[in-house]
Length: 264
Ligand SMILES: NC(=O)c1ccc[n+]([C@@H]2O[C@H](COP(=O)([O-])OP(=O)(O)OC[C@H]3O[C@@H](n4cnc5c(N)ncnc54)[C@H](OP(=O)(O)O)[C@@H]3O)[C@@H](O)[C@H]2O)c1
Picture 1 (cartoon, rainbow, N blue to C red):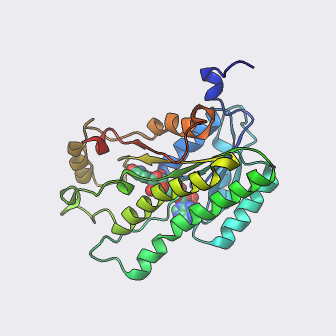
Picture 2 (cartoon, helix red, strand yellow):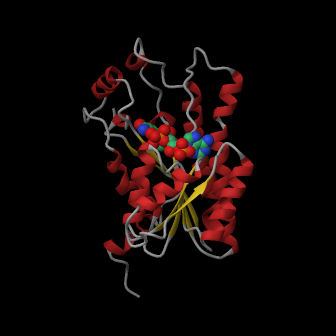
């Protein structure tokens, strides 16, 4: 058999992908990327109607076959139910993208212990869903690629002067959470490598939506080598790379797409 071509390596035709938080700012770009690369996409939202709306909006080869699932990653029961539903819709989940995020406003100066703990439900949810996908892939004897969405703030601290006087600082619990996701990636990658299940992290840099305060965005721009914010579509290539065969010998890595933020 000849080696795969570059188009084959980036082709997700025949794969089923499960993507959490697909209605969000970056989740929408991730959903489009997977669909455009040929995958059938099962998208989640906490709200079933939203998930179904996103699924119906997706194109690609599987247009019309994408489906929406209700799932809240902060609830183990909801993860169980959501994954069971995904398995009813597809007898194999080849790709998991853990992207959903229950946000926290409070920074280091005001966060309570309970809020801090609550925030960690996000990483617990990422783990529980990843384990479901790994176990099902092993049981059905097929490979799987798991992508956890991290953040540049899982790797570096934030600049206090980017936020001072404008809004709360980036939450300390968020840094602890995303750092945990980056490192959990390595742990799971090692344990699951011989199962044919790859685990990688994709860490966006600054991709503010229109809701972000303009003054903070201006300050962030000054901190960046590229002197501009990221646009959600600029994550699509990296996601498809990690999701499919183009990264078949890559596991346990954290790919930063950050305009050079962590390169200074
Ligand atoms: N934007 C950035 O600059 C940036 C930078 C670094 C990393 N990230 C990471 O990228 C990911 C997406 O961020 P984003 O900017 O697209 O955020 P977003 O627009 O707020 O989207 C977050 C998504 O998470 C879902 N969600 C909220 N609570 C949830 C829960 N309890 N269980 C499951 N899903 C839940 C929401 O979907 P429903 O409301 O439909 O349930 C929403 O679609 C996050 O993991 C974030 O930390 C973003």
